[in-house]
Length: 314
Image (cartoon, rainbow, N blue to C red; front, side, top):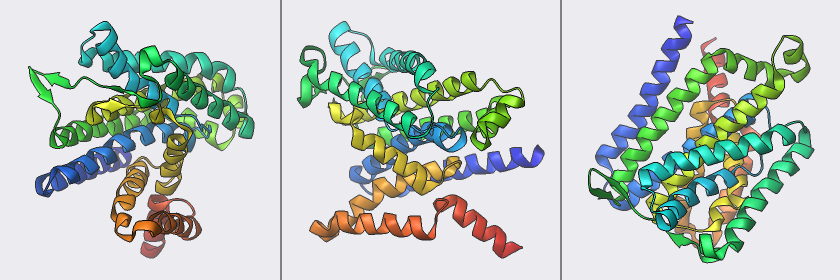
């Protein structure tokens, strides 16, 4: 256990260094914005990785919870005059309640049936956000009031870089503590074999719903931060392509690896920005790189590199 705790603190220190050191040298607001997008995406992907990589439960509609969190900070302050700082936890509670209600029936499904059910949830959320014009502004979306802290309006990408980085570090620590708890051991048992976990005394239904709710809360916080960073939100935040992108980040970084979640998010956020230099070949090159990674790093970037390092040492 002591060795595990040491590794846990080392990984947290590494994440903190990856946040702080670039923040001291980034030259412009553009780079701070890209960094904030990486941290926000990584926060959502950590939650999804708990569900997909550790519990082995597929979700193709997780962007729906991102949309709930994003529109919570847009609708509540605009329509009900709720302070933005209260709208964020309100979105978390709403996402948790929705996840609990829909999680109990759909998590009884397995395989492609579960994938289709979660996909349907994501599509439903996106349709509601696009059609409820009076509340959400419809397909054009709506503006989002800026966050104010001690009377200071937060709007600069530099500020959001540090806020989102801090939230990512907190989310990483919470996920590590969860995995070190009996619930985390139950998640691993569930991933390996649902039947064996049930025989060992694990309440499989409760564990599934619990991790689904937790992952929804992570996605909701990320959605709120994204809306506040942009100052505007559209139904695309809950779209199917966003869900696919989140799953791709999990797979690329490494399923069952929290640090891999950050690497996968950084890969899919930063690389498209770099490939814009190639203009019309941007998407082609991005697709080729993803295919090559999946061929040569089948377990994901972080787990494969870790395994190769261990083999080299031995």
